[in-house]
Amino acid sequence: MHKSPGARKETRMSNVQTAHPTNKAMLAVFWLYVMIPLAWGVINTLSQAMKLFR
Amino acid sequence: MSSISEPDGQQNSAPFFSKQATVAQPGFSRWMVPPAALAVHLCIGQAYAFSVFNGPLTKVIGITQSAPDDWSLTALGWIFSLAIVFLGLSAAFAGKWLEHVGPRRTMFTAACCFGGGFLVSALGVYLHQIVLLYLGYGVIGGIGLGLGYVSPVSTLIRWFPDRRGMATGMAIMGFGGGAMIAAPLSVALMNHFHSATSVGVAETFIVLGIVYFISMSIGALAIRVPPADWKPAGWTPPETTQNRLISRNHVHIDQALKTPQFYLIWLVLFLNVTAGIGILGQASVMIQESFKNSVTAAAAAGFVGLLSLFNMGGRFVWASASDWIGRKNTYAIFFVLGAVLYYLVPSFAANGQIALFVLTYCIILSMYGGGFSTVPAYLADMFGTAFVGGIHGRLLTAWAAAGVAGPVLVNYIRAYEVSNGVAKADAYTMTVHIMAVLLVIGFICNLLVKRVDAKHHMTDAQVARGA
Image (cartoon, chains in turn orange, brown):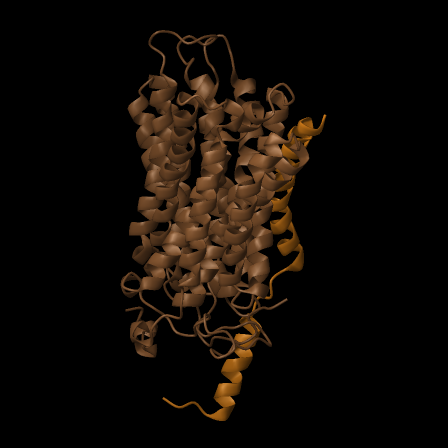
C-alpha cells in the first residue's frame, strides 16, 4: 500500500523521534569497564617482567 | 564517530535474544561494540591462566602437600587440553548456528557455558571427582570458549568494514590480556579462601564462574548488529580493481571449504601459530638453559611476562597495521621477519647477547599474536562478511592442530638433541631452524593466496535469505 507524501513524512518524523543516540557518558563508562581491569592486568605483568632487568 | 543515522522504518518487537532484536536502532554508535566484544574476550582469555590452579588442585586432599589420593599433574593437564579441543570443535561446528541466531544469543550461551563450566568444576573439586572438572571446565567451558571467541569478532567485522583489522585486533587483544587479569585475580582469591580444610580452589571457581557469567552477559546485552547494507558515514567500499584481494561478494560457509584459499589460509595460520606456540610454552626453561648462571627463575618468569605483553600488543598493532599494508603483506612480514629472526637467535644466545635474544623473541611473539587477530579480517576480505563467523570458526581447527604440533616439535627435538649429547644451551638451535623452515613454507602458502573464483560467490538473493 502506497502512503501519501504527508503520511510518509509523518512516519519519518515518528521514526526520527524514536531514534536513541548513544549516550556518550555511557559509552565512556562501558570502555572504562573493560579497560580498567585490562590496565590492571598489564601493570601486574609489567611489574613481573621488570624482574628480567634487575 | 559513525552511528546509525538512517531510520529503519519499523518497530523492533522481535524476541530479546533473536537476531532481529539486536539490529541497531538509529543513533547507535558502533564504538559500543568493541567494549562489548572485549567484555567477552577478557573473560574467556582466562583459559591461558588455568595453569595457576594446577598446583593447588594437586593438594585438594592433603592441603599442605599432595596426598596419595590427590590428583596428578598429568590427570589435571587434560582439563586444559579438553577445553582447547572443545573450543575448536564448537567454533567449527556451531558456525552456521551462530550466523543464524546472531551474536546476542551466541554470546549469552557462551556466558552460560563458561560460567556454568566453572560451577560444575567447583562441584567436582568439592566432591573430588575429576570427571566433573573434565566435563565442567573442559567440555562445557570449552564450548563457551569457542562460541565466545568467534561471535564478537564477526560482529565487529561488520561494524568496521573500513578498519576490519583494528576492530578484530581490539577483541582478540582482549583474549591475550584475559590471562593477565585472571592469573593474579585467581591467586588472590585462592589465598583469600585458603583454610586448614580447603585449598580455596572450589570457592575461587564459584566466584570466577559468577563474575565471568555477569561480565559476558553484559557484553551479550550490549552487542548490536548493523542493519543490512549499513556502512560508516562517508565510507565507500574499495573498488575490486584497487585491491584485488578485498571482495565485495560473499561466499557461503560450505562453499568456502571448497576453495583452495580456505586451505591456504588454514596453513598460513597453522604454520604461524606452530612457530610461536611451542616457544611460548618453553620460554622460561629456554632462557635459563640458553644463559646458564645468568638468568634466574624469577628473571625467566619476567621474560614470560614480557612475551605475554608482546603477544597481546601484537594482536592490536599488527592487525591495525594490516588495514594499511594489507593482510597478505602483513603475513608476508610475519614469515620473512620471523624466519630471519629464528635463524639469528641461536647466535645471540651463543654470544651471550641477552638483550638481543629477548628483543627477538618479543618481536616473534608479537607476530604470533598478530597472526590470530589478522586472520578474521583476511577471511572477510576473501570470503565477504556474510558468513565470516562460521568460516573463522572452521579455520580455528588450525589453532587446535598447531597447539599439538608446536609443543611436540619443540619438546621432542630438544629431547632428541640432548639424548645425542648436545649441550642444553645449544639444544634449541635445530628447533628454531626448523621453525624458520616452517615460516618459509608459510610464506609460500601465503604467496599462493589469490582472489576467490567468482563461481563460489553467492547471489544477492542468496545473501538476503541467508542460504
